[in-house]
Amino acid sequence: EGEGCWVGTPRVCSDRSPVFLGGWRGGQRLKGRAAEPRAVVQQYVLDPVLYELEGISPPIRVKTDIRVYGTAVSLDPLRLYVSRHGYFRTGYLEKNYSTASEEDFAHRLMHVTHHIPKIESGSYHCPTAPSWNDPRGPESGAGSGGSLHKWFRIAEEQNGLDRRLVWRNIKKALTIFILSVRHVVS
Image (cartoon, rainbow, N blue to C red):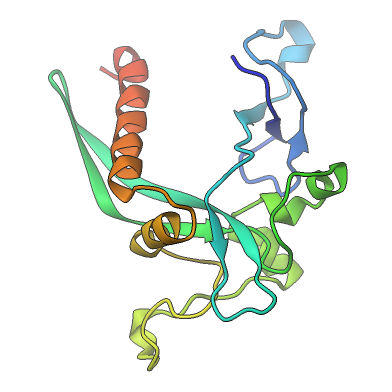
């Protein structure tokens, strides 16, 4: 219900052109022909966990997001399993993340973390995989993503977040989501 920046993705979730909606407030159901267009709308986090790329000079800090998987083992009583394995993705690796100006919001690759737009623009950088036997170790150097373990290290060391509190909040958010839809899926 708060103010802030909202982002909508028209047609389908994977659309590569997000539309920034400013202070848009949702909740109003459209009627008739106006109800036909669909969009995914979410509040845009203006202060995400930033990743300062390793080995890059001058330093570049980019936006990250995470993917965590889980399942509802039981709805009554509520029991969830949340995997400690997941991954993170980054925004555009060529420029520091910023929301300070309208120009920053117009730079769509800075705000989009899924890989397809970065691959299409030639800015995707594959992270070092464990199977490559790189002498520096897995996930060394800068890349367009990595393991959830690496993301927690970044959140703690580069952003000052307590990994135990972050993990607790992830589980709390998943619990609240499942509770909100339990009546529909049970």
